Image 1 (spheres, rainbow, N blue to C red):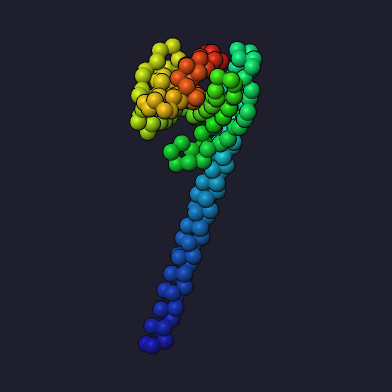
Image 2 (cartoon, helix red, strand yellow):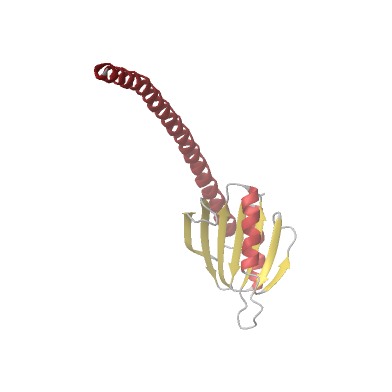
Length: 195
């Protein structure tokens, strides 16, 4: 009786192994297939991101070159002091392309920042976020500069600096200058090349 019980237990044990082993093999194959599919999706996403990155980089460089040329035509005596193009890696606006142009003249200084966002919605959100963040000074809405525009002054007589901030599709423009008149003079130079 003991031998029969042991034999039955061994048979059941081996039958259990036979049933378990194929099940675990199928499970492993399914996991491998899912991992392969995930890796293929990630590779496609990476390729799309790479293509998008190249397109955004080309676009920001083209915009900055047009802005630079237009200002050189309009203000021949101004000197370009700095020109930089960066990719911002932040949680607020990941992947943002930012270009800086810094000009100097007898009239003062002008700094132009061009931000290229992946979408018009993201640019709009950041535009309003920026205006809310700098709303310490006086803000006046402007017409004929992109989709939305505002002149921001310090509101303090000892600091005559000003900025014109405007939005055109998925592009944010900041024109910061040593005075209000210089900011208002320069902003249309930038807007012209975005048409």
